Image (cartoon, rainbow, N blue to C red):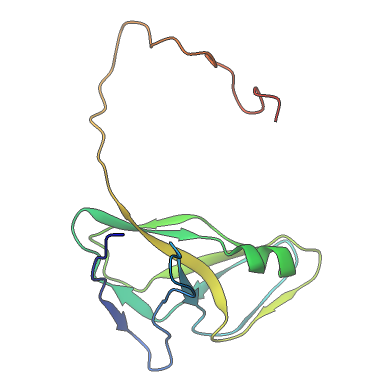
Amino acid sequence: MQTVTLPFKRLEENAVIPRYAHDGDSGMDVYALEGAEIPAYHSAKMRTGVACDIPSGYELQIRPRSGLAAKKGVVAAFGTVDMGYRGEIGVTLFNHSDKPVSVAAGDRIAQIVLAPVVRANPVETHGSLSETERGEGGFGSTGA
């Protein structure tokens, strides 16, 4: 397993630096800086109080925590933090439940994964795209 140094800066004294809960985890837990009450079927932008010096060639991916979704019906929006961004990392939480949900300062609200970036070279083609078994079958086309 490759290890990359990832410097975080506390922007607020009570901010918690993201960390892995277990050896072998791919995502680091991200913590709420402040508490919030999220009304049913609404969203809230949560502060983390931390910024990151993301190394060249990498990005941070913000991902939901399965426990928060299963227990409270709250899901973090997927997001990307590009390597050039040096501001506070924020997390948007969506409350999909029919009741208000309280989030306390210090609660784990999302995960972040350090991921390598591979850039595409987009080009227009005037010919046919390659043939595949799926073809043009869209969402739900595999019967799942």
